Image 1: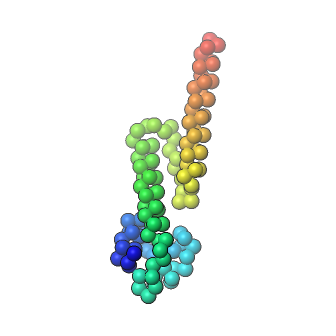
Image 2: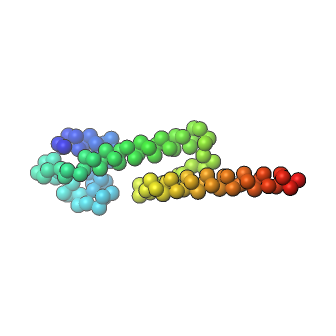
Image 3: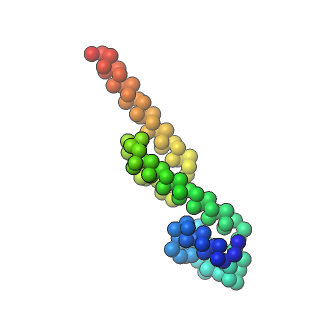
Length: 113
């Protein structure tokens, strides 16, 4: 990956500066700033940025689904950069279980009437 592609992927990923990218990954901002100029860009950066961009797109799609479809009762707005996919799925399953349990309770109440 060359400097031009690196800069393009940073922009697509929503990073305003290389320093912002470095801080997210707990890297030395000066080192990141030298990538593509006086240092080669590490081999893992391209795939990391592509995965990060894909994750952002998935989160945006999830937010749009929540907002537009009414499928979710309440949005998963507590998702952060550090939330894992497993945690997202676990939270969704928890909410779905709660919906089913509430429906069962309502059916039981109606049956008692």
